[in-house]
Length: 246
Image 1 (cartoon, rainbow, N blue to C red):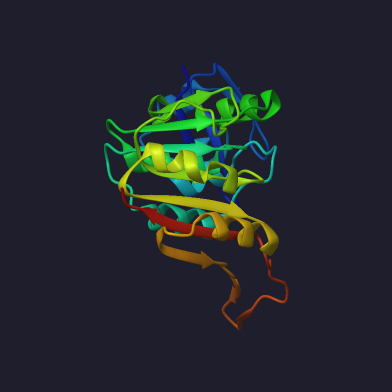
Image 2: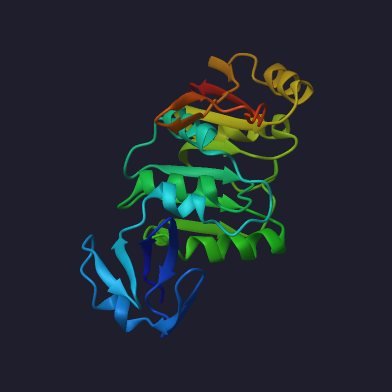
């Protein structure tokens, strides 16, 4: 059983598992975990000569420290996807293609205490990374990982929302109509306009169709040099959403 906390030291934050007997951390060194277990959450304490604090990790902290494998959905897109789905506690959401689990963690955080995330991930290498990342979340019990590809022949499962991070989501549109409740939303995440056009063609008759591309520009925050950063990350993916009524 794991027990993750965010360790904050001078110039560095990192996730630590208090269930381990010994820690070996960059910038701090090797020490027994009992030093961390004895610390009060949020209060400064001395950690082998280093001022430190322990905090409960937020979703931001969990996603920032994910074990990387397949390309993770960026926070700017995660936020939009979670918002447009309109999920509430107790809802069920099906995820096709979980990757490293960034979106999975975000979805699980929304549907607690008794909702479900049913995540289809056929690739063993991706599943192993996903399951290790899920261990860091207090909401991992809300996630069911299905070691299969989501296909038009998959068993329908009643849900309030469907998220597809797969190359050909248009093949699943008919299946989605059998599994989404009336008014439920489908969201797909795609890298190219050609894929977007094929999906939109299959979504004919669906309501509230929307295509969004998020662009983020960070700023340098030095007191005497407040300005946009010279470099920015451009295209990450298109978010396509639509609503189905029976």
